[in-house]
Amino acid sequence: MSGNWRSGFVALVVVAPSPLLAAEQAPPPSPPPIIQIGSAYFAKQLCSCLFVVGRSELSCRTEFKPQIDAFKIAIDRSRPPKTATVTTSLGPVTAVATFNPRYGCVLIR
Image (tube, rainbow, N blue to C red; front, side, top):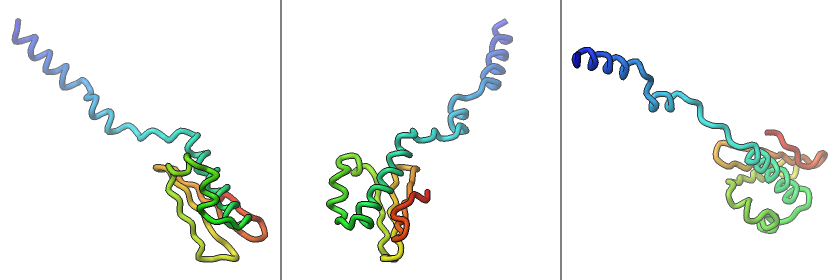
């Protein structure tokens, strides 16, 4: 009888899905919406502060302290006065705002 129990147990172990295997196949969780909103907000507001109002980057960043320190910020000033771009990202979330003298700063992503 003990031989039958072992063969049944082995079959049960082989058939049961591994929790590790299931975790590897699960898609990564999406970031909370508040991070997406925050990234878009900082991109647009920082773009407006820099290129519409004309303030310095340091002056603009102090308005959003301490939250803005968590974000990676890239400012592309290579094309002013026609256009400029501010990109903010936190983990996988990225937002981009572009400045155009006719329209101001607009979120494009």
